[in-house]
Length: 191
Ligand code: B4P
Image 1 (spheres, protein in one colour):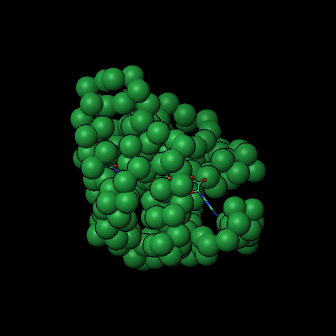
Image 2 (cartoon, helix red, strand yellow):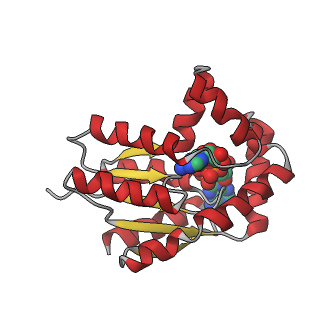
């Protein structure tokens, strides 16, 4: 059976992590979040985690080779999976090209990019709301939250054109209730 590989895309706070849970359950996919993988390295106090912590707390991206290496290992370790949801990856053109090259080697490819679109003030509200309870340092200050959104606009948003060129981009309205957005995502996948 052909694997289903989904890039769940969007700015910080768009709902990528939130929606991934529902999609992995519905379609039996593995969830790969580079943010979660990096936070696990920080928690374990590894050298990689110490390097990443500083950049993440400042709202900056970590180097491409770090995240590409992490994702490549996970893909090679799970050859039997039905497919993957990539959450927060790729975030740069170099990451997108490395992902395509790795998937080709494994005889697979990206099926679709689902791009969640949310207004900036709503993103800030959601992230500061999470920061009040989660303890995530990058969600606590409005300055860092806005820095992450600028990083997204400058380095990550252009990837929509990359996937559009491959005929794989689907834009999804990411405003509204979590359940309504899940339904929109599933409709885009099933349709
Ligand atoms: P991530 O962990 O990917 O964090 P994020 O972009 O902020 O999004 P997240 O998925 O956590 O939040 P969500 O939208 O689900 O990245 C963190 C950092 O790691 C980056 O800044 C970077 O430094 C580094 N990093 C990660 N990947 C990298 C890569 N590939 N390359 C380089 N660096 C990388 O949800 C946010 C909040 O909104 C939640 O509280 C949720 O409950 C709420 N919410 C969701 N949907 C909602 C809705 N419909 N209505 C109301 N609230 C909603």
